[in-house]
Image (cartoon, rainbow, N blue to C red; front, side, top):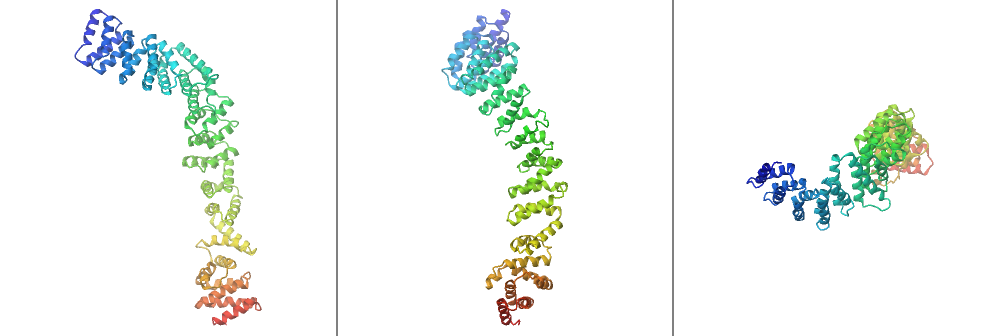
Length: 540
């Protein structure tokens, strides 16, 4: 730079316009020298009244490595504020002297300033500052470590290959020493992050070691991210560890492992390795497992897909059902799961999934479902509702006939209580005919407590059901009663006793019922009671 030009620039540093002074400081930093005049002028500009001028002067002092400004820079750092960071960076660029001064200063300032100094040392780009920055990775303050590693990572793109290798070797040696003496977690994590940014393949083994389940979560997460950047080819042990990571609840560990697994090919031999992911806490992991192995038509995959039918995520449920429908083993697994459902909610979930597939199930499927529904129904288990709904949706007439057949078979075996369970179910249908309604009323009569008090009889369901039948189908009801030889005299007496006290048609029916007792058991005690009731009610 010519002396005349320098003189003009130095004069501009004293211009009235702060904008002009700041621009001059910037130019001097780019093209200036460390001549006494420039050194003196920039040192003075550090204390300029305008903040923009001061910041440009600080940057220029650092670029030109003006050592006489060091004392002022240190004072500026200790003062804190916005300019302390620029002052720290300028001091770090002064070489060994500046680095030494900053390291001494770190022991005296507040934690916030220590972090700024650490970041400045890492960003300065000098050999001494870089060495000091790496040493700050061992600092006890995680904030200092983080500030340092962030700045070092930002400088990586500008490093030469040889510089990168030297830095990587230094970090590798630091991590290898950790086997003998444990490093602070923040330090080890920072070293892994920096190695990942350097992209050095020598670190791969160290990364694999640090994703094991017993390692801290933060360390595992950054190591997985580092491995993802290297895109290695994992061996069997590595794969096993990756699958374990992907299945964990902590998304910081699961996500990078998932990204690595996403690009791996799947074969029939390796499909089983993916099955644990179907039980992962994160729905994204489950979706990847479904995408990778959902088309393998094997029992283990089908069983894993069936478990997704109960998941709260609708998209996952629908995808699982779609895969099950396409697989032979899937349809079988879905059917078996429905029959083995442990709760009513599980049964309903499986029924909703099964409904579109019923036509593709084996011929004996509906028989198996009916038998299971019958067991649940007889036990008062609400899982029966879901199974019966499925059968009704498939073929309502078939289900009605099977229920009626089962009810009548049980009644003939004198299992009236169980028969009543089926008859009550049939009786809910408004289309249920008088014959079945008679069976319902008569089975209820068999099981009635037969309390003759007026209050008890008024609340007895079988008597109410007979009243309804007499109202709508009097002749059919009387005819059915005449044929129901399985009703005992005690049953008939209770029924006749009740209706004999009524009016008109019901009274006549009551007399007819009491008359049946006299025909079937004329010499029994019940017959004598029936005669007495007939006389009292004027029906003899």
